[in-house]
Image (cartoon, rainbow, N blue to C red):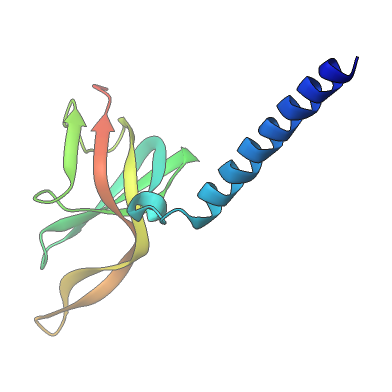
Length: 127
């Protein structure tokens, strides 16, 4: 009887030790660099060109939409490569405030619209 009790207590002690060490490792682990990257997805319903910096603000609807900055030379495009109104899109973005620069200030480029995320990757549907 004593041996069974000692074995049971030993097993419970080992389980408790593993759970405690697991909690310590999770608390002291490094913060991932990708923790500030979020996903989006929905139908593209409008695109606003930013002529001074060769980018676009892409307005995406539900279920997880918003106004996102698409830069053709730095945003990685997947699937059908159709970044245009009417198609479905999903991808990853970096949150922040990104100005859309257009020549509206007497010939000079100045911000006249803002996106609240920079598209890192985007995949689109065919239609």
